[in-house]
Amino acid sequence: MVWCLLAFGLLGLSTNQLHAGAAPRGGNLQVVGEARNKLIPIALEGFVGEVAGVLKFDLEVMGCKVVPLADAAFVVRGKADGSVVGALTDKAGNPGFNRRYSGGNLRDQAHALSNDVIQALTGVPGIASTRVLFKMKTGPRAEEVFLSDYDGHKPVALTNDKTLVSAPRWSPDHSKVFYTTWLKRGGIENTTVIQQNMKTGEREVMARYRGLNTGGALSPQGFLAMILSRGGSPDVYVAPPGWKFMEDLKGQNLRRMCVTREEENGVTWSPDGQWLCFATRANGKRMLVKVAAQGGNMIRIPTSGVLNPSEPNWSPDGKSIAFTAAMGGFNVCVVPAQGGAATVVAAGEAPTWAPNSRNLIFTRRGVNKRQLAIVDVPTKQVKIIPAFVGSASQPAWGN
View (tube, rainbow, N blue to C red):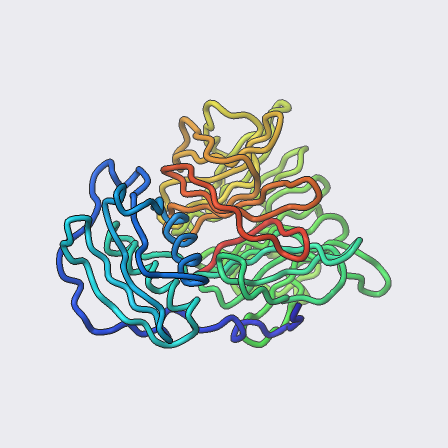
């Protein structure tokens, strides 16, 4: 395992560093209507080894089903001869595109081909070259924040504190990471919200009051939402842009967004930064609520059909909220952002959305460890990410 505090540049080439041939895309093979919410049958021809495995995983994550040629509606034919070559057609041979990929390694090139296939078939950019944050258990009482490719490859540790961590989250521009740690300072261990610069590795304490300090969700406008118990019971607070904990130790510039007797969890901003959503309790029942960014009353978000919602995450397109429901086990659910009938999409917990607002990455509990998994929400197809050395959980999807 590689341990490093400066991980941003160590995870291979980004999408814009991979180059495809200049061949035109050709015909229109786009899947439309209700078919976009069903598994797209696709065949792979000519690929072997790692490239074949990457393509199968990517395409099935993003709503396809790799099938024999006789059962396919579309075909991707190609090879890997030092670089990946791929051509998309429909079953009748009508062309989509024919491209050669260069830059990066074969795995990166296969991801780029997968993205192009999905873009051609659905009109939505693929997510095979994205990255995820998560925490991983590395010892009896040690967890670290990790960053990896979305499929779990090339994991790099962002921390090396040998303590407990929780809830890693990206800033909207992905230049910073927020997480909760149990670091000792002055011989005292206390929950602490940390902001870490992804380019320099520099860390800054954002909250370390007596009691609970967690959360760390940044809005596009720069407002930082956290859950703090500085006023007694843990409640949601918002710090203004540019706020410095060490310059406001009394928290005079913090805005308290709710006053309850029970603990809140799972703060998440709407993509436009106008609403803050979190889980709370009323009359002993857990529920999702939202509060306007400038403050105001809590507004309930109904989740009909499921109980005990927690850990909400607002989709990038603003249309849906994913959350965990505890009903004799943990389930990943999705509800319209305004509330309504909730849909169970997978067994698991702690979901966060991909940039395409279609996939969710979440935690699934195993016998001896926790694993990360991805679900294609419309089809409910689940792919387990290959096991890590340690128990991985609480993922956050980036770009």
